[in-house]
Length: 248
Image (cartoon, rainbow, N blue to C red; front, side):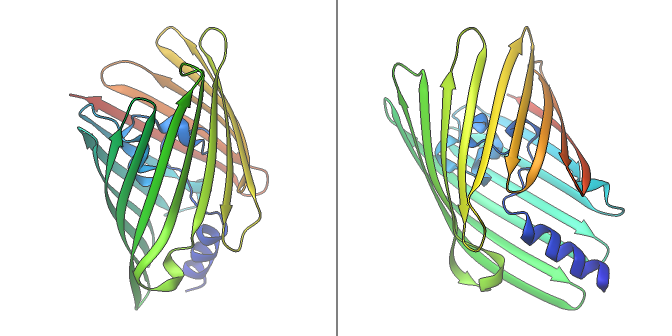
């Protein structure tokens, strides 16, 4: 019982925990054209057919497992996510669609979530909206998205949040990222990141204030593609996340 209460407190205290190792510290625009974008900003869903699977052990807590599978095709995105530990389980399904213009992208996603803690179970539906814009010939990208807009079910499962994201394409293969994240009931969060591409490998560095963490991640642009992220919280410890993506 006390373990379930701790898990519930932990994950509601650390909002929007990104499971894709290539999201860095939670920088939205790192998910551009990736299947897992459906969970965070549906405007970033890509047209290519691709499926991805990610697995994490949050904070190396015993019996705690987090898995996510997502798929995209022609601007449609589908995803399923689960978090489990003993008698606690949190499951989420989501479907979304992006629309692309010359420089502007927009997207909408509908999510369903249920939470089980011992004998208790609650469920809810939510709506996510997203926008993305490229300027200065793609050198700067911006995105704005709203998540957790509850449309039915339990109030406690979703908390409205807004994220404003920026990407700056530097010289060579260096990109800089900054997200401003605000969720109801939490302080303003900052997530900064940097990606460097060396051949087939991309290296990501990042830091986040909500939740507090430092990130180091690697990805290989092979077929299939592989990713790994080490996310370190100063008090709760390390989270190891592994991912694989297959483009068809």
